[in-house]
Length: 271
Image (cartoon, rainbow, N blue to C red; front, side, top):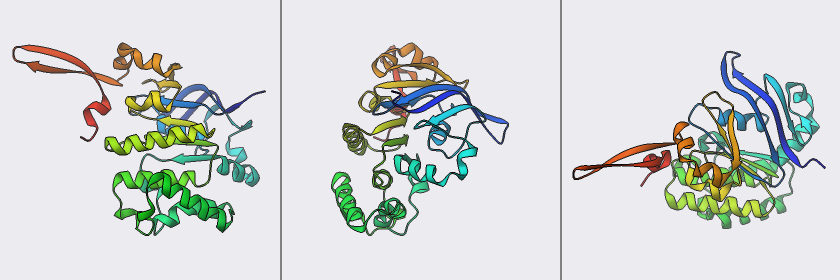
């Protein structure tokens, strides 16, 4: 029995029909798996997640979700999309895109309300998420009053409120301090323990072995150039450097120059 949640075969996508974003992506995501997609800026990671979420459709190739082909032809199938939106949750890289209600409380309950979840069940989910994320004190605040870390937590909570079977995350720890990053990684670990399928696009190589078992690397040609277990891909320093995922940085100690590899988050992560 096929347990794939997503199956892509030779998928191409371009913006405005002339700016290639993905060029021949073939991959599968199995139910209950943890997958990371990594690659330098501009290689198409966010575009891939957009396709998996049904926000865009391939120009060429095939993309299946839960055994049904995702295409513009399916756009009019309200029953399919209603079920699809119950199953798949997408956390955008920029939480300001996701948080649009007057208060944190309204943002978190928005999804379940649209899906017809009972008020009692919505309150139960809200209380549970507040406990998990430690955000009970933020419920009456407006999103623009939150820090970037608080916004990220609320954005993830708003998606988990629909209790999706599949969680798509675009750079979930980007711009966060180490403690907040740690908290989000722990939350994702617990979600996976519940059986949630998790697909994460990230530059943060430090977290990959904790949030993913399998890794797909997208190269400069906007196609997958390597797939494998997380520990094997991350151990290949030469490959990572060649594909702009780590860089060599020189340090001078007295009269001696030493070179050390750094991930991009080593260099840019807030201290």
